[in-house]
Image (cartoon, rainbow, N blue to C red; front, side):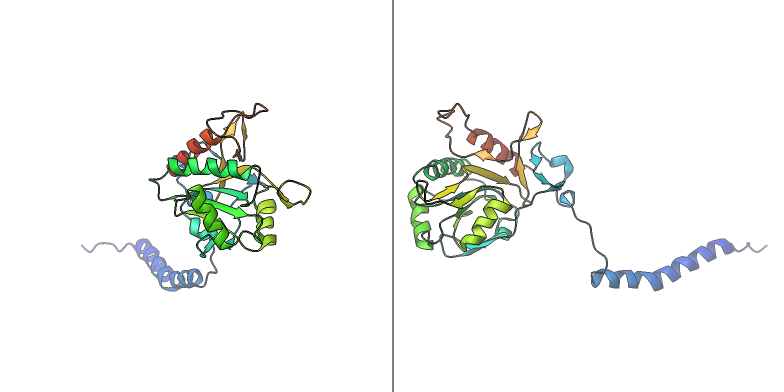
Length: 245
């Protein structure tokens, strides 16, 4: 007795065969010509299970990422935001002739640097707000005098308008030229902390992100004359958290 043919099975197989022959090459072609796009978010790059408790700083509901930049460092090399991809790093704005807060900020950053000497994926990005004076040679001398040894610590100079836009719009770290103040420039004494994927991060205190870290008070001082506590300790703690993500 002959077995009865399962025409239903044959029909399904035929449909699958036609789909494979006709549609799959078209889908591949669309992907190759970039007609099909991916909606990427931070979760495409980071394992949620490995995220620390540090907040993503959000603007209009979107995580704030470091804007694109490209400047010249103390060694005469062009450095961009892409050079920091895969790194945890700290951002500051300063100038070498600053008579007030910059020496304190960079002394604190040297302490931070020396706490992470064994980490090749930790860095610092320092942008001068007085590029007319702060040439490559001046920045190199400044770096040597302060003891900058981390190869990922770039002190950068370039177009002043581009630097000011990066500070004021890219990070909301106030920067301005003002002849009436000591040193001739005003700028924030805060540091921004950036994760491996280029997002601005910070710890949460009492339900709100602190956004930036005070860079002017040293760990040894503990508090300033107004009773403001130092934040270098928590900055170091949070760098470790991001390095472990």
